[in-house]
Image 1 (cartoon, rainbow, N blue to C red):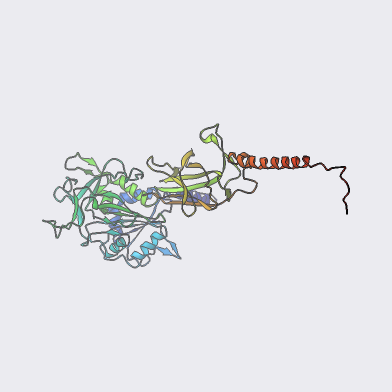
Image 2 (image 1 turned 180 degrees about the vertical axis):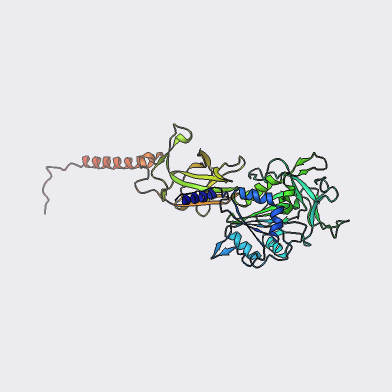
Length: 470
């Protein structure tokens, strides 16, 4: 009995420390697991300390399978650089895309030390991500490089941690410190896909070239400056995540907390370890995950003599299926944000808006949801409004889609009816009808007066008139 209790406690402990919101089974695909375990040992220990169960497999292993009986066998994949042209029958581009469609997450690492496999190039083309055609080009920068390790080749880029993409987008990868990216491969993102988002772009002085063919003169570089994305992301419509790291060496033990120095800077420790945690945390759904709790709507009574939340009071029961036109209605939605190991209240950026749409075929109302209450792990957003003067089938819809955040699309359908026959206001309560009411009563009293006058004015007959003669 004691052993059973211990096993149950250990299982509960492992579940609690499985920080990813989608699972903790992590597959590492590598050519040589022994060497890569040693080169990336700190990286693997950090992942295991966060609750992941790592398994190492060769890309062409016979027993490697991403699906079994229609279900995923792993939750996340890390693809390390490989020297082979293909990834085997179990890791074809089609199967990797199916893995993403089934809510799996992938971290792809590249390096200029070995050519990119054709299977990886084909996979990236499916996602509208383009690499150099020669597959051996790397990114150099003669103004932002590590003078200690790359004083001559300038192929170890030193970059500040990325800033926010926009003022209304939360930054999961920022902070202080320099990131060292040795021998990075340039990625060029297509403009036709709205699912692609750059995490870290190259400086304005960087460019991509082939050191074997263009050692002395670079005629037409593959990409330059901000065209180059060093770390890229793709979040699918089902919120599954695919991240491309252009420098696999940045995850090695040799570059974790390594002393680096720019051409005009001081020697400092690199922030690769902290950046690796934020990058894997986002890729494996530890951050940027939104959860919707209670969704409620009800009739409301608005008091003019009060202000704020006290001016709105609930009328009737929650979540009715039918409303009447011109009803005052309150809509509430509870939202949380997953942050590594716990749910935290979701906060909207000051430059962003969380909105409610009251829509039929198109929105009749688009209103800002305001935070009303905050609990330990959630925020309740609310808005009160008056229904339009239009009957039909409507939807309360919250459609919130932002870069680096999981998609939220909540819909609740309701029926909006006309006034019932006993709900219309009486005619004497409408000032515009007073003229017609007065006309009716004038007609009635005029008719009565006419009848009374006509009866009172009957002519008198002659009493002494003689008889009619024959």
